[in-house]
Length: 310
Ligand code: RIB
Ligand code: CA
Image (cartoon, rainbow, N blue to C red; front, top):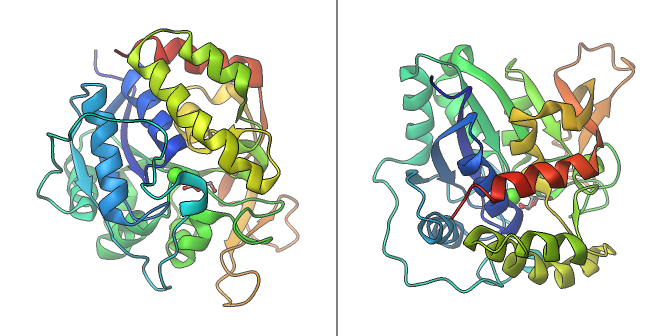
């Protein structure tokens, strides 16, 4: 029997991106058909290299593609202070022996969606540049997208500016294209993802699994224990994992319908997601927005799946 969800992960590895990748590779109901690396936490050269390292380290048979190296409109910004100079500081990998596919990641996304007999679920967990480009180049792909389950935005405070979360701020125009596309969107914003904190007890628990995936979790998340203190957080949130988890286990989450608009004014609110739960804007909801997480069940779910990996 074919797997329940055909998923393309678009990511800017990144510590939490890597764990989302592991979950997607492990879960029995997910067919992770491809991974596209995008510029975000670090420049594309680094996020692509990090993605390939994780795939090689765990011996995953999943093709990796290089996506966009810069945002659609604004100048590039990266998050070295959180993920380190490499974009994945902490773990030490063997020499990289695998490489990305020749095809550009945006063309891969378009081709795969148009050719697929089943609808494709897109899970973008970095700046949504690749998704925005694909939707602009071939709008007809909207008909064969199951939904876009993304990590980004917030209805409360941002984390890169007081108003904006990093993924949306790094490419606001791409986020705007996604939320105005008409494709069903599930938004895992900071209000939800900051509930998924990998503190020392969680790190010890995942390392205790005793496999390569558990050790990689520990090597990565011990690094973010320190870097997240910048934001007054006691530990590193595994932001991106919530998007992959929702794809197959929505009952771990409380979500509410909302009208979401991205601020494109080049001021203090640039890249902010304005989230209207109450119809004040007079617009129909265009997303389900994560508000609550069953933390205990979430970590049980993640541990169960990391145990499935080498
Ligand atoms: O703001 C959190 C997001 O920024 C996550 O996707 C994290 O990986 C970084 O890209
Ligand atoms: Ca990310």
